Length: 420
Ligand code: AMP
Image 1 (tube, rainbow, N blue to C red):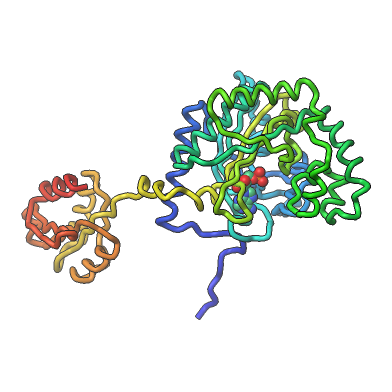
Image 2: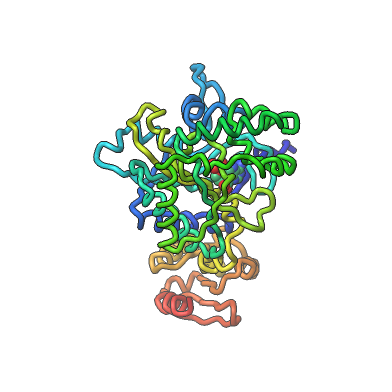
């Protein structure tokens, strides 16, 4: 026997019926985001490697060690996208999307790729639902984006998720803070992990994200970013909080939240959920006022978030499934020798009337077909014999009650629909 080929490590097949949840979540995202004026964008999975180097940042884990990059046949370095914002920002610049007025609001649903160590909730191909609001610098935009995010999660049935919120200030505030943080950490260098020591040079703010207990303890005494905020950054954050308070959005200030990517400025946020183990972040986002310019576009501010769809689906409240489970189809089976075309035509007639139909095309016996329908949890079976087909009739079997009646096709359709 030929050797079986397995899926690539860190990737998953999403199979029915689980895919129903995925589709239902995406449908709700389209509906909710649409109601806030967001349009769907689909960017390529492949981009020039330089896009991520320039936007996400050379010193980040993503660019440093997690990208699926390769040279194509002409020697160009391409990368499977590791996150959504960079590609959306590139598309915004490439199509001069701001020329007909700002802000532009976009969302994107699809797979991302990172070469990480796979574990529960962490995959090498995972999926994100991204939303980006491009072209407005004001705190009201930050608040509305967060409001939309919270409403979306509420629509899925989550009611106890809290937004973790912080500001990383603008570039001026961050520069002053970076210096103070390095001054504080430099004398403690020997007690830092290898990763943090490297970050001390390349990206010191990321050390605040450390999950190493010793470092977390050391950081207790570290200078706080909010002491270094200049007036504009402080006012912006204050206004975001006021708007969220006013709209009743629950949040908690998390002074050490900095997020992993280089392009963030001012507002940053995350949502973490219980029951996911160590990979508990389900949403990350923030403002990225310098990114579009960095990619050769105009100086246009923006803010966005990425929801980890795999993790989100993992913890959907139970009630969600009830809302997205469909009626199992009607099973249509030939009783005895029947012209297969007539059977297919009958299936089409039932579908035209709005029913979902599973036609037994394999010539199974009625007994075997019954067993299969039962296993599938079907309520109805339509049996069609050669004579009945000629008379425009069928035998309709109610599998729940074990009753069978001989009726016209129209009556069968009406009866099924009546009890649906
Ligand atoms: P990030 O783009 O790193 O800010 O991630 C945003 C969200 O995407 C996270 O909160 C996670 O829910 C999800 N995510 C990131 N990386 C992975 C991964 N390797 N596997 C599954 N989900 C991920």
